[in-house]
Image 1 (cartoon, rainbow, N blue to C red):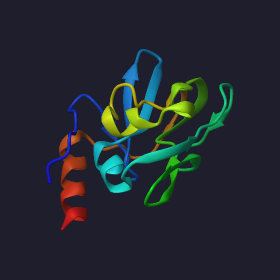
Image 2: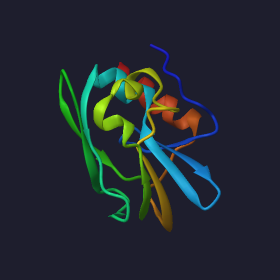
Image 3: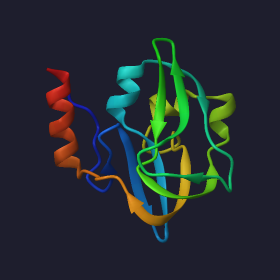
Image 4: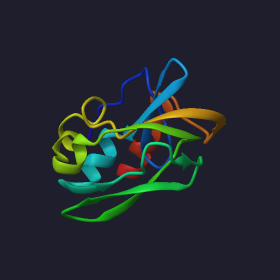
Length: 129
């Protein structure tokens, strides 16, 4: 199956995406991840002001099929959280790279090894077989 993998984003091996916007990054889960989870019914995210650490869990996403930890692709301070997802999780499935964003973080410089779209698509293709 072909998944939407925008070329302007960077990706973690744990299926989170990162979009750099000035001195902040926006984080969400990939199209592949939302497909694998199925319909998302709950998301738990950190509060504004919290610190996230690259490679460590920052929250949980639950679907009708499974519960899965969310892993921070970068370290930094949470400057915004998509509170709309508390009452309506459907954007995670319907628009994972837009309205389904989860966090906005001011990074402190440390980050996981992030993949470009081509490398991430290759990783997903390997998993899908």
